[in-house]
Length: 486
Image (cartoon, rainbow, N blue to C red):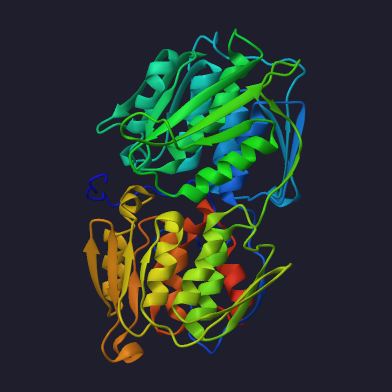
């Protein structure tokens, strides 16, 4: 398993504005006011993970693609602006929920441009990882850079995987294999790709989506298969399965290989694509995006924490997103579940601590950690060592903030243990909590305020990264206003 690194607190301000009052000032605080049981129905905005994957495939697809139900957020806007910078014609409407990507009748490449395209990626991990792979496959000259924290987030395993199969040069400029990433490429040549899977599944997802792009830009047969093999542990596997489904929707084919692999290889994926007459490995289409399951976790957690009942519509266990499995974790803690064709309802019941491997749904660890504050007994979270390399150290920094509320939190190499006070909620108390400019820290920690008075969240505007309207939607669901202050 990859050895965790110490986190570096993030200080850069978001480039996006939020609808929250006075959100442009770092001193803004939001306090969720305690009340009774939370009951209601809500549908979160579209999935960030699906939106950015669909944008990559649509950008290198023939004809026109229309994405509906898309997410409007900092991460998706960063992706759209980067694609526009390299020449894509993209129209956004319906408040960002509809995105049309238009390609000309014949493919083109920017390989011959005199100066590198400068692409500002802010702190969007999906954008820099997906574009690094896609642009290295398509060819051209690029420099991908972002905020200070982005330049501390590792991307070396992805760069190392690309080097052997790329015609040209690619390197990460910061220490320890971190962005900016500089690319001077004439595309990929044929060959097997090997990538480490323990830091982020987004490396593998980026390479998988890039394979049909490389096939289209190669001077070779009209059909090409690229094998991408994973070395060692693969974290967050449901996101890879999601990537495969998106690739197949846009005309590629994905085959999972588990036998006959070389030493240290744990799984491989064969990506096949037939280049069409317009010279593209993907085909444009109308693509509907599911509501965001990671965002849904906050509303299901609100029911668990408050003893209420919340229905999230638009998501069932058949969803493409693995994070819908968060409801099963809540069920293990004592909640009741009800599912029908329209969505999933969580009803809160007395909570008990659990021992749980969250590797497959690691983006919901912070949500679970807040629920664990109100459980009877400790909760041990395992399998998420890679969470230290997200927008912030989502193990160490999370432990720090939960301790402020009166819990006892122990860090482990692969996760943490949250032990509520011996006298239960009486031992919990309010505090001013840091977000480390991490959208998931802000959204999850705010839920503690449903039952604890005086929980104040710093810099709530950082939710703009994936969910600009989070606090407004939470207000509607709980039926009372938050308190905003400085």
